[in-house]
Image (tube, rainbow, N blue to C red; front, side):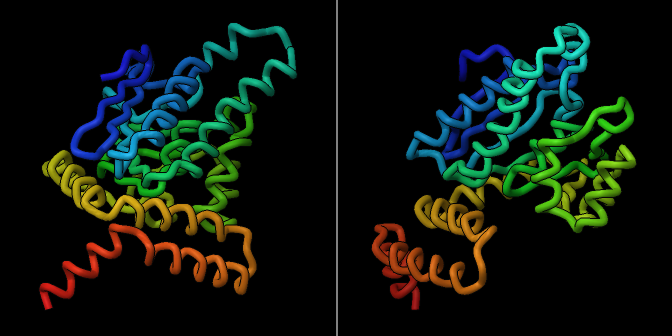
Length: 255
């Protein structure tokens, strides 16, 4: 278990289980929580025994977004300070994208604002059928400026614009239809189904998972032929790994 104040972190069977731990504030984000979450992810990235990162929120909600009390308590108007704080959130999203292991976000309750951005930034999102998602910043005269970059890569342009300008909170069903999440998990089998999914993912080759994720996002801004060439490089590299050689040997023995 970790020594963090606002995040818990434990490793079990190749799975780094990281949880936002401010249930009394619906896991609202402040600078300390963001910093601790980034550190927990960094620690997981350096542990070669870890194959998957599982990201959850303690209590009823995954994350209610930024803690507005921190905004209200700071009337300094110091734009430089505000930029530094915003970069902490931005850095988290980049950390998640660059993390060498697949990150699975499991959402129960609400994932709003920055919390919705964190969930969407995960590689895979599993949601309870009662979960809710949204970007309500517009309703208080704010802008979901940082998380917008992730949202636009997950849903269509029209859907993304509607979400960030309406401030609407949508159901898990609508989030699945929009393409924000991967699966809805029924309440009566939630824990079992999530554990089965994550355990199955963690059973895959560590080297293959790492190379797949890196290539998947590296080709984001590439033109077609450049992406194909990047695939050639990774294809050749993958064939040199011990996991691949053992996998082929195991397969041939079966056949």
